[in-house]
Length: 162
Image 1 (cartoon, rainbow, N blue to C red):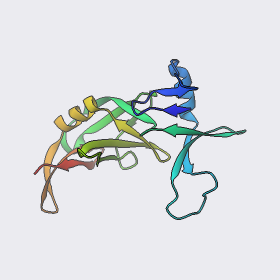
Image 2 (cartoon, one colour; image 1 turned 180 degrees about the vertical axis):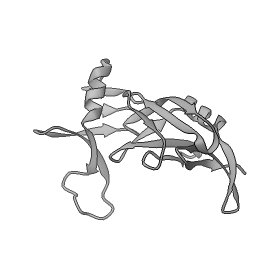
Image 3 (cartoon, rainbow, N blue to C red; image 1 turned 180 degrees about the horizontal axis):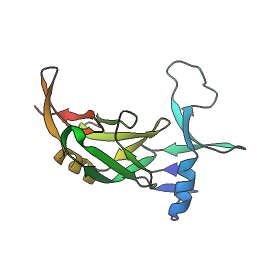
Image 4 (cartoon, helix red, strand yellow; image 1 turned 45 degrees about the vertical axis):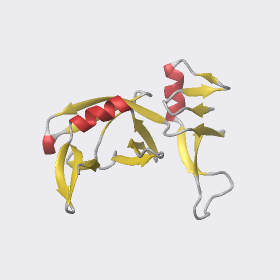
């Protein structure tokens, strides 16, 4: 099995078309050390589908889920940002569901993610990220101008505003 960067799940090279199957598989998805490498420093983490009787490794190109919807409630410090993933999981960004933006590739393209659960992250798709930036505000942090958003009383940096 494989999960493409766009969140499409594949089995034996063919996309899984039934959303209920993707939701079921995502509910048993775990992340842990590579097989046979428990306890080694610098160990890489892999993804597994785990049931009471078996553990199957799954290839994930980027993040196992993709945020494809966002709703903003309230504003400023009272603001709450609700995300919905391609697996129909909903979450409010807060101290347990942190938004992080790193850069990827040679073009330094933003790579926005939000923590979903148990070490699993969701890639925030481009359209949602643009809406997130629109909802952002500038703050000065450690002498730098930072663009970020408030959600559930937490401020999440989206990047430099300089």
